[in-house]
Image 1 (spheres, rainbow, N blue to C red):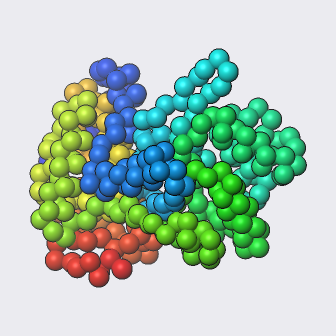
Image 2: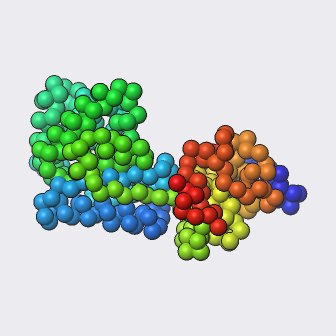
Image 3: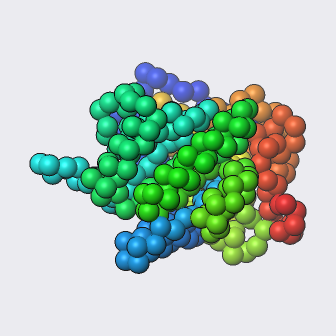
Length: 336
């Protein structure tokens, strides 16, 4: 546990200043770009524009660990091409569809129809639903289809059903002739590799990698991200991007931006309950325990000044299923 100078302070709910400001705060409301994010955007944009200007129905497989920022990327791209309502039709330039947890032809067709605004997603046979999909894709002027959570195809225990759905989807894509981006965890690539036609369609793969900390350049980028995050925090706080603290943030998050958001959001909520809200080592110590690893041993909480600074990837630790961190002195092979 931190020494007396950094021991957790007691929250005082009876002294809340600007309570609404803190409760409504989330760093997720800000789109903070970083190198991998921008490269992913460029890849999506290329497929999109090739479809518009060259009428090439290309494909892109975008994969990344949970928490790497995939959903934020595709939602931000979609929101840059907003839906527009007209008297006779609704224009949906970018259509984002969530793959059902246990995909079947029926529920995937219904998911696509729901995303297209069909009021009767449950009506009709599979063939009728498929025809409605084709009609609405044209009527809504869909320029790019993004299918998220694609790894659910290989999570299905019924491999034959998953293959049937993949074949149906392949047929839809062949007829629709619009570019497609499929998004998911790294194992989503297994689905593509198992189907020869899908493998040809999605031969372009982009891995949205987490941050690493094994080179000066990588450390500078991560610290730059923390400096940007610092600007949006609505309370006074220590410099997140200071070298020692940045390393601790990296270990606490495994380089995944979603965990940065978890810690910052929780820290603001904890600080907001103080009489004089501010974020220091104490608050970050508490925020890590609340948002990342509840009941973490104090000697492994990265925001304990006396913590053992090592990757938290052993059995029972928060990142045991993640790729290994790249700390100073590590090589790229260490992350394989």
